[in-house]
Image 1 (cartoon, rainbow, N blue to C red):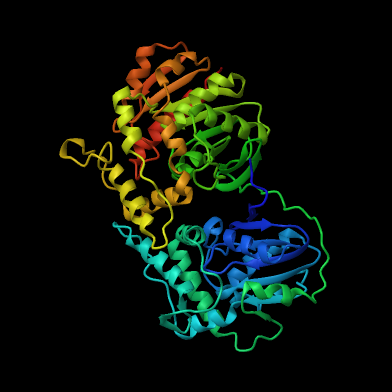
Image 2: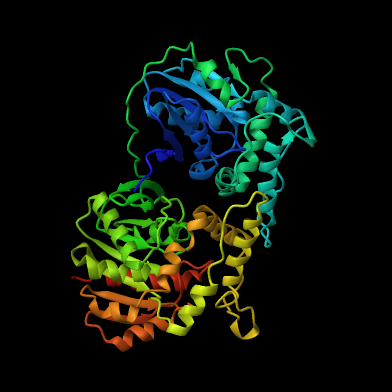
Amino acid sequence: MTDRTAAKPHYITLDTGQLRLWQLGSGSDLIVLAGQTIGAEPLAERLHAALQHYRVTVFELPGIGGSASLPVSDMDGLGHTLAQGITALDYPSYALAAMDLAAALLPTLPARLGRKPAATIAIGLDRAQAWAQRSLQPPPMEPRQDGTHLTALWHHMRDCHLLIPSDPTQPATNGEPLPTPAELDAGFVAAAVAPASYAVLWRLLIEGTINITSPGDLVNAPLVADLPAALADIPLVANDTTLPRTQPRPGNVLWCDYVETSRGRVHLRRAGSSGRPILVIPTGGGSSQQFSTVVQRLSRNRQAFSIDYFGNGLSERLDRDVTIEMLARDAAAVIEALGFEDVDIWGSHTGSLVGIELAVLFPDLVGRAVLEGPVFISPDFQSDLLDNYFPKIIADKWGMHISLVWNWRRDMFMYWPWYRVERNTARQLGVPSSEQLHLYAIGILESGWTYDQAYRSAFKYDTASRLPLLKRPALICAGPNDMLVNGVADSEKLNVPGVETRLTPTTVWWPDPDVDLAEQTYQIYEDYFRREL
């Protein structure tokens, strides 16, 4: 179940994208713009610890984390976007604060707001100005095939906490409490979602910080611990205004959402706002971001949505020993929370197994199902996979987990299984581009120490005994180069009534599929879904 003592994420939909915020607490309202050295989530939790009688709402800046879809071009655009987000909250009374470099936005932002803040507070402005005076910049952010751009970003952010802002040759002996590896990891992952945007945003804020020659009406709070005193004499009225509902984006433009279910908070990627719904169930390990194109393509004339499993991507992390049955019940809870009577299903690998189990346990919730590459594994290979496939991934203070994630995901495209690096286990898929590997790595890094829960459950599932229980129509398929293409033949041998099998021209969600083959494959899906039940 959702941890009510932790910061709650939420999306606000704007014309140009979505802003994500994190909220915690109750009482008088403090709105905060997160900086670029600590993430909005851990910042919200630190602020709440210091300000027990405030409701803290922390925005991720455009280009960062859940706000990465928003453009980052100039200070004027940033101010306009943030003003839209703050205005959407419709708080009758609030104070506005900004962390370190984000203070560059405070001199002009209040003028854009119809309802002005009772006070504007710069947290750590001296630190930010010291970085600006020595023209501190992040390292090159262009993705590299070895993934070291991410390691460099980690150390840039860590050094911002460790070193004297005006003297990078010496460790600082005062300042904010040093972040834990988990806190640093949360900020790093948010920054790494769109590294080029992070770099542009840093440059804009550095330049803006230099231009703050006089604090003016800004209240200076050197540290978070100084905020209670800074807010003590500011008249604020507590209110219980709820967050605005996350609105869809037009057409088949992708948008993100969180849904509170009976089993916890689930992150969704959605497209389309009307028509028969289709649930896209992803592979295990990372987020469903790599299936965004599938969601968008399947949303033509209908609405499509994908889930991040609990413990994967941006959904809530739950400490549990996961089974496919649990994932199916989680999916059913999402369908119920969204108010759908039933849905069609498209699932791949782990997602195909979840689709089978969902249809077996809750047949009334499922119309048709396209199930790609269901997992059939012999008992001896199953034991080998469970023993060797999943390295332990825990945030490390030196960022050593980053190289592990990157190379683990890269080797998967070269060898099956990845831990047998031998000539006879090589796969002819092609090594993905640096940009594509970056996308895959971010999904794993977002998942953190719980990344393996859903993934591992696929290797424990008895597909051969559960598939014959399926009573809903299903198409079992796979592309010719899918490592689990054997699932098509294995399913055919079971001769389950209502289940069809076939090869598709390609695997549509793999990096850079052939355009024509991908379109042919999507047409197969659409033709199948259009059939009468």
